[in-house]
Length: 323
Image (tube, rainbow, N blue to C red; front, side, top):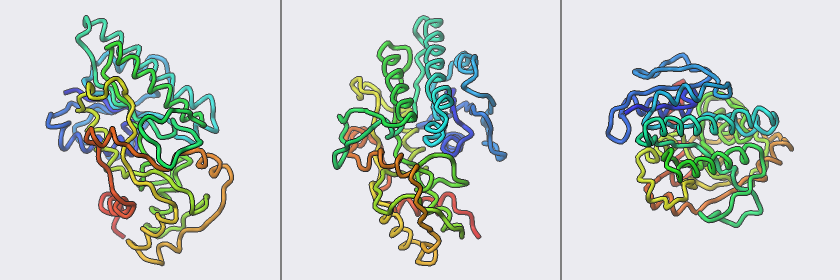
């Protein structure tokens, strides 16, 4: 089975690649290719790496010609960057997806309709906008209030329509905020959710830019890989034409995050969290959903952690480097 990961150099892409290289995809061995603008130095064994910028003309068309069986589309710039650099957000987060779909359609037609790849697109809970109910149910409408959310919502709609026409067999999975992310902070407005756990556990101070009453929806990187693998093998007929899914996660306040860290690591670690209000981040976060009832995804077999303490322990097991 030929598998392509767009955004294969990123944190989730690398974790997915390592899983596929070690275990295959749902019991099938894979011929794995990663594409990204850059890659970390520790290469994934057995995976080909292609370096390029998906925003440049011809990139998606060249990749489509290799006719991968499964394509994981993780490539994007993050929420904070998409909001501050309007043009770049659209050029990276929306237009390449259109070119990919058109290129896959061309390959479909060149084979007389026999080539229909599975396309798994990582969307976001940013496709929603307030006012919110206490819990967002599966029929709650999309009304994004950021450029990033708008870009993701448009990609979802395009994938649904190309799938309806039979050019691809796609689905969009709306990831919770992935936490705790290893490594350095990125430009995502949500980066602090990981930072207030990761940095103290690594002996560093962390800035908290929002009130501890802020509530949000989380899942671990381990769960993110599980979501992607499960989506790749899902019988999409079970979606009944609704090809975007809210995924399971943990809803908790920042105060509850901190309390979970206290239970796991103690008061000295928690003391490294330093409140420092940031009105720009507070404004973005205020427009995000806080809790979900993802009944469709759970019925389809998607699973995640049950508590934020469990999310912290996943980070410690998978990514915390021994001192």
